[in-house]
Image (cartoon, rainbow, N blue to C red):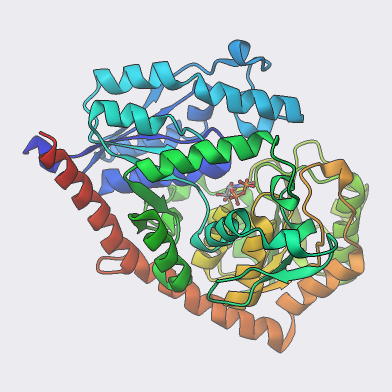
Amino acid sequence: MNPKSRLHIYFLPMMAPGHMIPAVHMARGFARRSAKSTIITTPSNASKFSEVIDADRRSGFDISITLIEFPCREAGLPDGCEDLSSTTTPEMFQNFLHALDLFRCPVEDILRRGDPDCLISGAFFPWTTSVACSLGIPRVVFYGTGCFPMCVFRVLREQRPQDAVASDSEEFEVPGLPDRVRVSRRQLPYHLRLKGTDDDPLLELTRKVLEADEAGFGIVVNTFHELEPAYAAHIRKLAGKAWHIGPVSLISGGTSPENHHDCVKWLESRKPNSVVYLCFGSMAIIQKPQINEIAAALEDIEQEFIWVVGKEAEVEEGFEARTEGRGMIIRGWAPQVQILSHAAVGGFVTHCGWNSVLEGVAAGVPMVTWPLSAEQFFNEKLVAEVLGTGVPVGVEEWSKRTDERAAIGREKIASAVARLMVGEEGERMRSRARELGEVGRRAVEEGGSSYTDFDCLMEEIRMFTASST
Ligand code: UDP
């Protein structure tokens, strides 16, 4: 095979599950399109997906992992803190961001010794643009979030409508968007709330990220055009080049059926659309008072459920015995994509992380939206107000600190879950969600919008490679 027709794509995803998971899907997607994929990451991050990569290799796909050490000591982090979800204090978070800069030398070394045609890296590695430039290869950036939240962020950063309102609770319109989107200051990350928060380390990083992004080759987004057409077009206009290739959970061939978890077997015994799935992503820690309210709500309305709680979460004694046969608690990691795509699952209570939103959309499942931090409040607006496939549980305040969060009461939870799972309103949302899921699945099939965009991305990398040799 002509070496130029067989691309070698390197991936450097940010070390956090919400970034690693979609990046691995992408890498596997490239390998399925006859490219060679190399994922650069640290040993403990690699251990979470090495099995699936080995299975891909056994099936004949050209995909591998190249390991680099995480510079814990140099960055002032405890040994083993190799993943953003293990940072528990603002200082650790800060040190983690510093560690990302220390990857420059080892990554550059790997690329120089290899034969890269392109580097797809997380936005939090802004220095990868200049490294790629010095090697004469394109750097494509991956933010991990969708076009809608990216558009909202941009308006808030550049036009600052949040400065014109008198209080944190007053709602204001985000100007210039295709839909009428209203938010309040208390739904925004701290660094965007008020002027004068310029010393926030995230603002400084954001500046570097945007500069690197503008000098880069383009951005790849885990979305599909039909999900957010006006926003996808807008991001494409702003970025110069943007490729929408999602839902990426559908382009990687999934996991093998023998890996089915007990909960998937349990779902086999349930009626279609009878079970609600609750999960707050990979980072959030839910405090005991909130866990109690969720448990009480599920009991009050006798709802069948699969509920993912933290490994150490204390669920009220007796709850599991009382709900035995009607529900399942998973402590730790759940096979989310498999659960969502099961016919017995009729609703998803989600913290609105972008991956979860897209996985819910791809599975055709309506949602109860329960945003916590990051850009999750914007994702809630997309689901509940623009797509019409979700019911907000009623969270009012953005908060990264779990101990600062006011618990949402059982009545609100029970009412939102019941609206989704019982009655005509829920049925209407479910049928819209199903249609959207169908469109998402078609997008990644041959001839679909994401499939075609994926082809365009590969073609543009090929053209770049040809023009620089
Ligand atoms: N996830 C999972 N099992 C769990 C928790 C999370 O598979 O028990 C996956 C989920 O499917 C998604 C990712 O972890 O792909 C979480 O990403 P998201 O953007 O939703 O939220 P974050 O964890 O970044 O807040």
